[in-house]
Amino acid sequence: MLRLPSIFLALCWHILSVTSAAVSQNSRTQCQFSGTHCPSGTILVSATDSRADYTTIQSAINSLPNDTSSHTILILSGTYKEQLNVTRPGPLTLLGQTNSPHDAAQNTVTITWAAANLDSTGQSVDNVYSSVLIVSPTLDASLTGSGTTGFAVPDDTPFGNKDFRAYNIDFTNTWAEYSDGPAHALSFSRANGGFYYCGFYSYQDTVYIGKLGNAYFYKSTLAGETDFLYGFGTAWIQSSDVLLRGCGGGITAWKGTNTTFENKYGVYIVDSTVKAANSSIAPDIKGSCALGRPWNSEHRSIFADSYEDGSIDASGYINWVISGVGRYEQGITLMAEYKTYGPGFNATGRRVGNVTTVLDKKGYAPYSEPKKVFQNQKGVFGDVSWIDWETVSA
Image (tube, rainbow, N blue to C red; front, side):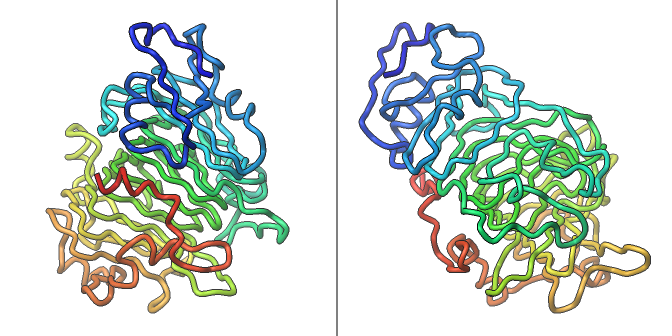
């Protein structure tokens, strides 16, 4: 049973006997706002309130059994300086306390860490060690690796968390206020996870979705400068803000991997806004930011039904040229847009650049909803039960 935190003294805990994965949107938001209607067994974390069960989030995570049971952790307002590591397979929900559960700009829980990989080769130090939050069953499964293919994951590696959820939490890598090597806010591999009204802030390689990673972002903020959405897995970014803190490389830098089955690994930015992070930087980056560049020829990313401000390069995407050789490969690389609009879309510039594919309705149809792109470890499409559809539909 939860102990009553001092900030909720005027209220009573009303714990319901429900699992974290099944808790209704109304119960969740009441739990975040007032501490009532939380799932049974919810663990309370606070760095300052003596009534909390734990003072750090990681210690609360470590207290959970390594099994398939469902658990919820409620994090009270504050800044927590720690790296989080989730390896358990069972559903886990992290709730950030907030008075505005439908507005990421009003989040009051921030998790920070300051680290970067200044080697950047992936050979002596891996990018994963810079991460604020890591969700992966093993270290090997989480490694970015070197080169255009990364490291092979051992065949006996299990699939990790099947239903990870986070609400109203900001994950911020504070290493530097500019690109200074890979500095993850999130490393997410071999797992299914949804992030709702969350924030991810860094400059280089902010969000990494690794092999067999399935990540869904809803009404969240993803901010960076250089290749800040990258990986091998699949990310669907819905109704969110992609903020440009500068221009370097591209927004997206997907790798893509060969498998024994046809896949749709990539990043899909849908019904979202792509814009300068603030009015001060907007004039400096006008017309300079690329939508992406191919880490290898199997890069796949699509911006769909999204607004692009004047920061975007006229060509849209750009090629990635190493020693005079471009990684873009006609007919294999898919760097695309569908019904994007705003001052950042330049039809003539897209044609001249010759690497951006502007899709029509038929071309976009195979990627038009999450169930068409998210796959399990056997390549089967359609398992999206781990997405909180009640929150999305509301």
